[in-house]
Length: 275
Image (cartoon, helix red, strand yellow):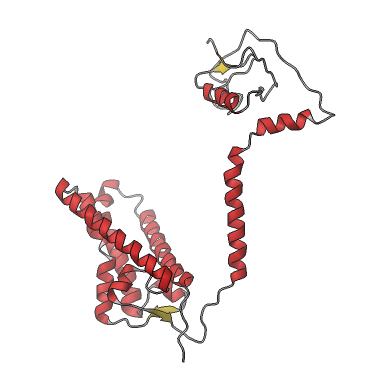
């Protein structure tokens, strides 16, 4: 029987599931230990994470020949042996060395050496991912070092992939990204004034006189951000603004009006409030 090639997205999803499973178990441990003294858990946190990862890999790769994420997606390692399983476990626990050294505050020389080793591994991981995207095999650096191949557990039921769903998701995500990018660029006050100007039913208020007295207390809020004014300024009306709020809006819109009373005086655009 011809072997069905594993989809790249399936292999990446298995890695994602493994990561999320470990994160979930870490959260459970943190929740269980939250009532203990912080000084009791923090010094041995690297060891706790090491034991957790060791337990996960022992009950998955050592016993079943595949990670929990792979088992959920009906895949496994094709040529996993006991020796490779042990090496797989050791290679995936190397993060403990880096974390423990960081907790131990090593010398500058040792820290520099560890950083170089870490950078080398990251470069190798990047190269491995690039090769994986081209060939579609061995997404993990550990798998490439040990020569492990992923296959379906049951060849009769490979995972199907619907391109329609992916296309819809890509279009929707692209649309959301465009909206999120464009919304901050819209000047709502200018747009509001533009709509009012062409609305025949709207009676425009014109306030141009400068009010001399302004009440400034601890409860005074900025007319724009509704927070306590920082460097309070005014634009001629009784309302008070933060300097940044008022100056920023005037820079973006030369015809900016008070959002509360629609006051605008070209001669008084940004004056400091005398407390």
